[in-house]
Length: 130
Image (cartoon, rainbow, N blue to C red):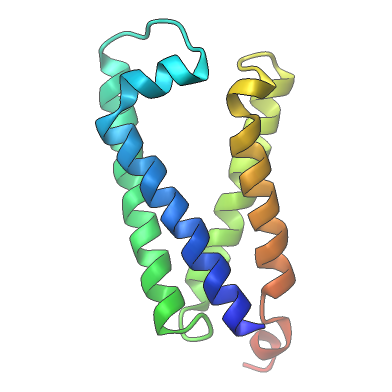
């Protein structure tokens, strides 16, 4: 169970790092791929800041996974909360018509799947024994 959690954390974190790097270095290309209209120049700056957050988060989650999820249970809990919040925000944005499912559906699906995986692999018994 813990090995599965480690693997899931590393995969999710690697995706976060890759997305973060894309936000930093390829904001125009991502806008085109996502079907967003031409955005103001400052949007690239905001995406770069978001990218930095994704890269840092991914790096710390990988370190926590490698060093042991039980020792770094707060990072496991952080990953659970982030995946749930991203899923909720993406779903709300789609339902409100701010974005389409084709634009944000992959984000919603990936994070919903990882939220379920993290919750399923969370060491509930080991945590309650502390």
